[in-house]
Amino acid sequence: MTASTPQCIAAEFTGTALLLAIVVGSGIMGETLAGGNAAIALLGNSIATGAGLYVLITVLGPISGAHFNPAVSLTFWRTGELSFGLFAAYVAAQICGGVIGVWLTHAMFDLPVVQFSSKVRSGMPQWLSECLATGVLLATIHLGLRNAAEKVPLLVALIVTAGYWFTASTFFANPAVTIARAFSNTFAGIQPADVAGFIVAQIIAVAVVCALLRGGKRIA
Image (cartoon, rainbow, N blue to C red):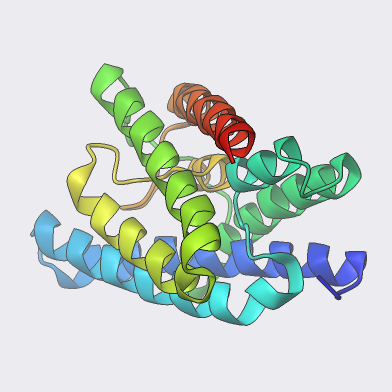
C-alpha cells in the first residue's frame, strides 16, 4: 500500500460514510416507492448496496484496502497485515464516517438529522444470522484475496446482495454499520438496545475466522 496514513484513514471515513448513505438512502427510497411492499423495498435496498459496494471497493481499495468495517480491519490486524495504531484509526474513522453518512442521508431526504431507530432486531435467529453473515463476508474477502484478488470487489458486492435475502438479519456483518443504523429510524434501522447483540455475534465470527486463518497459514 503506497498511500499515506492520513489518506488511508480518509478513505475509510469517506467509504464508510458513502456506504451508509447508500444503505439508508436506498432503504428510504425503496420504502417510499414500494407502497407498503417490503419485498420490493428490500430488493431496491439490496441492489443499491451491492452496486455501491462494488464501486467503493474498486476505487478506494488501492488506497486503504477498502475495509469500511471494523470486523474486516480486526482480522487484518490479527493476521499481522495491519498495525494496531492503524487498526484503531480505521475503526474510529469507520464508526464516525458511518454516523456522518446516516446524518447526511437524513438531510438529503428532509428528515430529522438526529434520530434513533425503534426497529426491533433481536433474538437468537438474528444473532445467528449475524454470526453467519460476518463469517461468510470475512471468508469471501480473505479467500478472494488469496485466489482471485482482482475479483474481490465483485465477490463482496455479490455476497452482500445475496446476504440481504438469505439471512434473517439482512446481513449487517459490520459493527460500524450496526452502530450507525441505530441512528436512523427508517427502513434500514436497528434500535439501539439491539446493537450489542449484533456486535457480539459479529465478534464471535471474527474470532472463528481468525483462528481458521492462522490454522491455514500453519498448514501452508
